[in-house]
Each structure stands twice: as structure tokens, then as C-alpha cells.
Image (cartoon, rainbow, N blue to C red; front, side, top):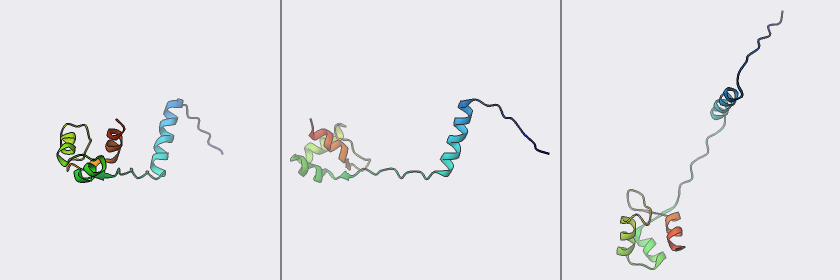
Length: 81
């Protein structure tokens, strides 16, 4: 004897179930780690003084890590201005 069960669900519920299964089965991509530079390195790159670059970090114009290493993307963005 065959047991046929009919399940009624919404498309949204089915999508959530599929997403959960795929999240468990698919490998998670490694987050990209952005390069950072010291204040001295950035000062040389931008041909500015250490103090000027330090002031830009303090002002939030150059984005930096908590240990004041400056993000590559921030240097690129600043140098394009």
C-alpha cells in the first residue's frame, strides 16, 4: 500500500526552506581581507607629511583600523579627489 501525503505550503515558505538547506550545504566564502598601510607608508604614497596623514585619519577622512592602519580603498578614494 502506497502512502501519498500532500503538503500545502506557500512559495515563500518553500524558498526559505530551500535557502536554509543550501546555507548548510554550500561552503561559505571567505571574507576578503582588505590591505592596510601604516601612516608612514601612506605619507610616502601621497607625498604628504606623517602629521598630515595622521590628521586625516583623526578627522575620519582616511578610514583606518582601530590600530590606525589605513585601508587601501580609503587611500584610493582620497587620492582621486
